[in-house]
Amino acid sequence: MLISSLKNYRNILKIFPSLACVFDFIKENIHSDTVEGRYDMSDGIYAVVQKCVPKDENERFLETHKKYIDLQYVISGKEKIGWKFVDKTFQVHKRYNSKNDISFFSNKPDTYIELKKNEFVLLFPEDAHAPLSGSGIVKKCIVKIPKDFLCPNII
Image 1: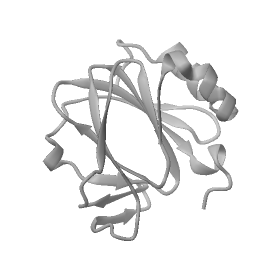
Image 2: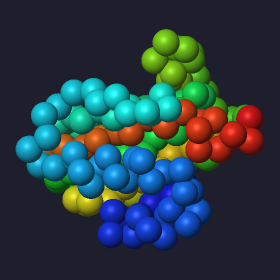
Image 3: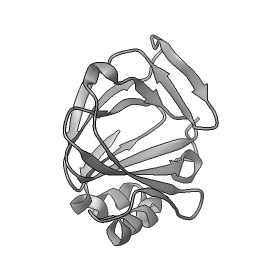
Image 4: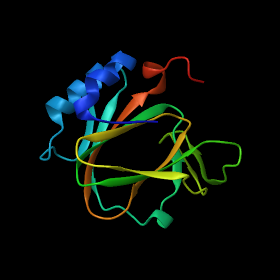
């Protein structure tokens, strides 16, 4: 997991130069008035803009993805996200759905982060996360990045 601000994107590009297209897309297209929906980019990358009402922490389940890395960017509001590193103690709530690339687990997060406007988190396959916890309306952009695009050596 990597947490940062859009102000810091140049430093992130030193670690992950292939994310340049993602940050360019966010800077050029994602604003408070961006219409909700799916936006296809290149190389199998796509973004989903959504406005949501978060749920109470106890109503959220940890989720993981096998094919995609998530970059979750807050456009407006605040988002609280639970996090726990995936290990062998995980209890399956809903088995992996390959069409939607998602599994749900009933374990509780070890920690929570709060993202504000223009902040983002990069979540890898081993980062179980419970997004949209907390209160207040949040508008966000979830960029789905094929795992092999960003990290071809991750199993």
